[in-house]
Length: 375
Image (cartoon, rainbow, N blue to C red; front, side, top):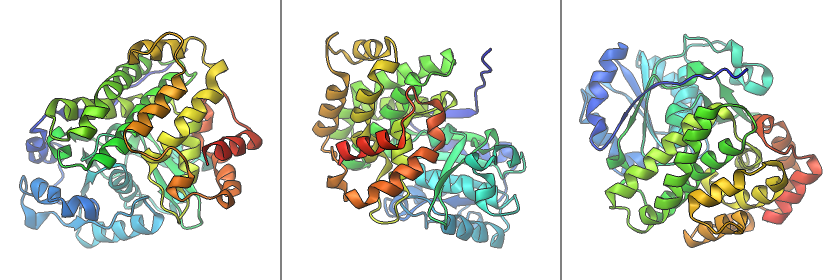
């Protein structure tokens, strides 16, 4: 028997940001904390959003690091409480949205964040008391605006997932207009993230046909539009399609991810170098596709058809060629990852929650081999 649920309310289209004030009122949020990062603020997007509201009534927390940390969550909670907030606006890519979820949780639940981590049996400890979140993505990548999880680097060096239906934002406002100024490299990296989500969730062995159908639709949109969006960021149709692909990738998280994300989460937990999640996915995806090839039935053929590849095409090679054509790194070494990082990355990858839904469960030795191949 399969139990299937979907999910939250999404306002999607150019100009959707104009619905923000009404959605805050609908949720009864009178004083939201706007959580974002310095890049989004510098790009003027914070001003665009605040232009829809009473600026004096919306404190801004713009200190999200590239990979959200427990320390930043606690700083955000202090800002939330000091300003007597009653809700959160998450504005940015996956990092600010995940950080906002962490703030919404920690501001309303007692104890350290690790208490609520999925691998610490924390899912059931997260209650409906989580502060309401409205998520506004400014990249087309993570799908966190409709996701039930948040990834946080804890102070003890681990990177753990907080997962609960209560962490799904109450509203997602997806306005492709906000992505028009995204630089080519970030467009490509976040787009590969969206593509990876759709591919990995499609390959997950869990039974969830609605999620699988959404994953296939999102994968096709991403494959067909990522080059155009990267090469011509002003192409509104391509930006719309990529934001939809990212949203669909987030909607399919219900089906679970796999070894690409186990490795990306693990490598992304390094404090130095700081590694971009989407770029990591682009490096790992071809290697994991080869690793899983004998464990996914006819699913690769379905992907070849969607991507317009020849029936005998090597899917992993095609993905690698796409990543390279977008100007993204194709090795870990090009990102600053070194062989000395492998042991701790293997340990973290083995403990990652995404292993529960991978088509082929990797051993420590196999994870090490994947990392060395990607190096």
